[in-house]
Image (tube, rainbow, N blue to C red):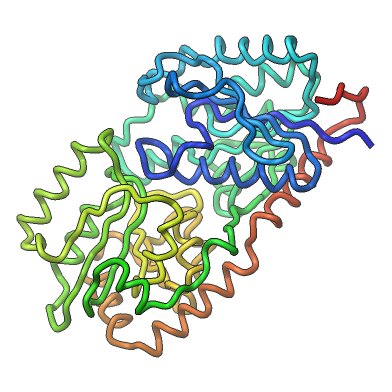
Length: 408
């Protein structure tokens, strides 16, 4: 049987880049892990992304059956909100690459709305089916936090892509329902594919050893991992920390960020000092992905005070390491966290309730341990292998038989 050939379009961000920098986050992990697991299943995958530096090779072998292909897509240092005009020239370069290699794709899987425009163009030229995963949706971000700065034309384009794609995948049932109710997406074209977690990498480590590695000395540890931007709710987190009653030593670790987010980081550092938290809060910056299990295992809780989160990959990785998550009751976090069992879901409008819940977990070791075990049990059912198998089902459900593509 001729192997299925899939083109992943990840226009604005490269899956080979490390999460935590700029707009590099869970989507990068998703595209990389999904592509690798599909490669393990015998699918031939090419990931197309824009060139981010002159040092990048044109074609990089990411894993067996998987390549990352870098093509020009606007200035390497262009911010995300300036990339729209470069989408179709990028898609044309993908087509030329195909022609040079003499290949055609059976499925185009686009990630994010910009990629969706390129993917729709490529699906037409390949006589292929188009699958799109948005990862975030403009209208949901706008509703979650007024003035989030998304252009109005993005909402219109997202709605149009939902109607034209062969399949639209959502990470959770909550996101799927929002696509129907907010965007008017056709229900028969929607499918749910949850994110996964690498259970071999993200697993519980000895807490004492993990804390020793990080230089922690008996404090209760509250951990945040992710990008440093207003929609992630870090100002709210700092205000919660300022309400903790001081009956125990507390350490707040904020992991993530890079020079592109320096202005927001500086604002938060200033607020931290104004709140008297300079000895409590540590802005760790970006760390190597391989170090994250140490941070998760050292934490009493992982906190996600986001105003909007389509799924919450960080929450799942934390849970896989046995750390319960206390999060805002928004987006896909509601599907992942079972309130009172593997974590807590709380309203963002009430920092006092966040503070009280954190104190309860900090002072009740039995509760913390039982929730940590339940968190790991949740993660055990959500491997990337299962995600890839579901994606393959979606591809096959919408892919007609066609002449065999030439092998690579």
